[in-house]
Image (cartoon, helix red, strand yellow):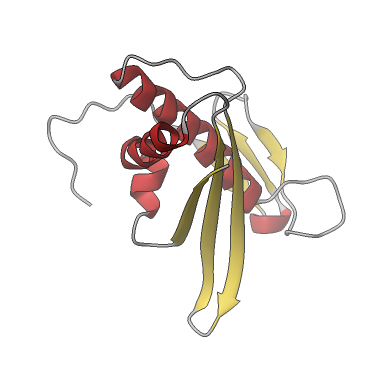
Length: 140
């Protein structure tokens, strides 16, 4: 991957993970310290798919707010993103799929759909996954 020499690094997340899906992960600043478990396993750990869903949905809502601000609009406080990340296994091996269900109360449907599509073009997670996994966006 090439980076434009004009790109400015805004933040670098650093984590240390041991034990894979049955281990733990901790950020260098200590703000994230989680036990990991396989999806569906008993226990109180989270899994990478849940972490990815949380990260993408938070980022996507920020991108949605940015898209709204570009149109001199403000999103309602009740705006929400329900992210679903599927871990799949098929003929070509393991893969992911995603659904982002977006709720923007009080916004006309056509405008809401425009904002969702604009956010999908802005969001770094959307950019990173574009063309790599199945993604479904839905204004609910």
